[in-house]
Figure 1 (cartoon, helix red, strand yellow):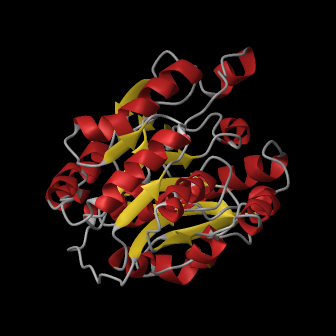
Figure 2: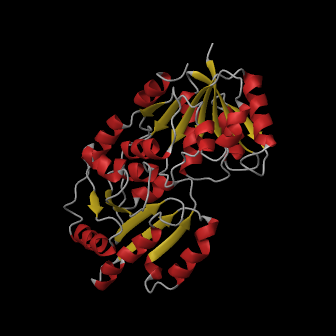
Figure 3: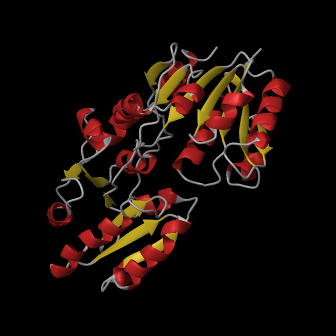
Length: 351
């Protein structure tokens, strides 16, 4: 009999964390009986039919506050309903309620970390709610260090590094009649879209024909600021706002350069997808990007948050685009971030 396991992600958004929770549920569905618990009426909750194809149970909870009786009672009822012993939690704030949901239950609690946190959470209350966590799983060394600094560990809490796996497809490229640059991901503060646009100014000054494709929906809190910047950009006709897309690969196939000057990633799915497709990738030197360099991946890093250095490196890449060679990245990423490695690592801590 497959061990009943819950993956909980109560976020209302549709970004990397939410997509990762769905992906992990699918990956583990062959070896565990998975129940995915999400917030009612949101992105994950809309994937019921898709999840049924993997025999994944979808349960939803309606709530207004991250600390409240709705999460506490409903999560506890779902755990009892399916006899769940393992819980993999994606998130942070709702753990306050889940602590009370799991009181008195025999739960192997795993918290999965995919984003960099800034403020230490080592006051008495956070020490209490994190005290029952069995494992903190980080998806890169940068995040593992961040978790050790930010999060309080209980007496029996352990840390584990597990790289996420990806479904890597053989790279296919359809070259365009002008240099095509790409950035994918939610348009949000610090995600790099504004710096990417600013970097392209040097291409304009050097009379280089180009287009920059921005693929991703808006963080509503940032939408007005971004559009104000975009509308005032003198070369906005070279910047195409694609919006959200379920077919990011089609944009990868027509691009040569992945321009991703993000301020604070965990381990970016978007960046790894681009690098695995042998695009020439450019990032800032921060968070997990130096780690990817150490693993042997070939890409260009500019000085952190240095627009001038980013522009210089972008111009050099564009002027030498026919000489750039990132073909080994596909093979290396396929080995480093394999599905079997990820499953084996999770099976070591699931029971």
